[in-house]
Length: 256
Image 1 (tube, rainbow, N blue to C red):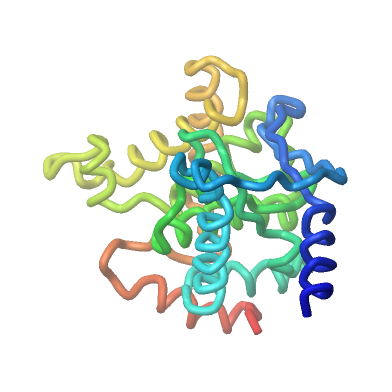
Image 2: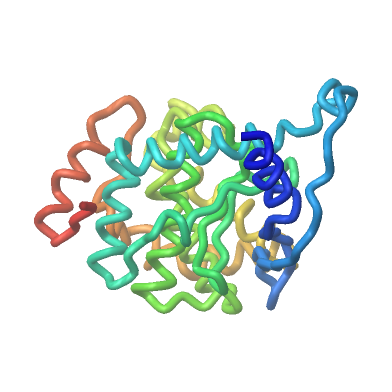
């Protein structure tokens, strides 16, 4: 038994590891996967007191939240079914990864690897994981179904409008963000979508605020009414997500 433990320990120390580095490719923030053989450092008791080693715990928790969302979230299950129906079935071991990111980032989509990234150091709650998964899967859907070109700022603006429209904005969230008041309820959702899309475009591309606003305004009349594949805007504290999931059956969406 002792020899067996020693062999396992030796293998663990020299196992192959995968690393992700965030880089900018054609103005789009992406994750580049690099592979290398390296020795895993041994942590001392003082290292644990300093918080080292918590990354693995956060990663495991993130992966559990992702798995639970895929099994139980109506929105995520709907997106999985829509991607499968479009010929872009999602393998969670290949197309979704939990990684450590900058403190201001919650997730991302890498079109080169066709992979959704969930930031385990910032996206720690199941509800937030559901929102990030849905948002990034809309980008994945647009890339697969609509031949999205991330180098085209109008394409980027359109997919960010759609993601904000379908995955984030409600009157309550718009009010919290300062984009709405009881007086302008009619325009509240549109203002929220534009505000969210603007912040996303500025984070993804090295453009001025004015350039991002111009792109959003150009595509807004066409992209805001496009509710595919969810089919409806999701109101907070409503049964909308369950209705959308049930309606997916009529469009051939099957998440099994």
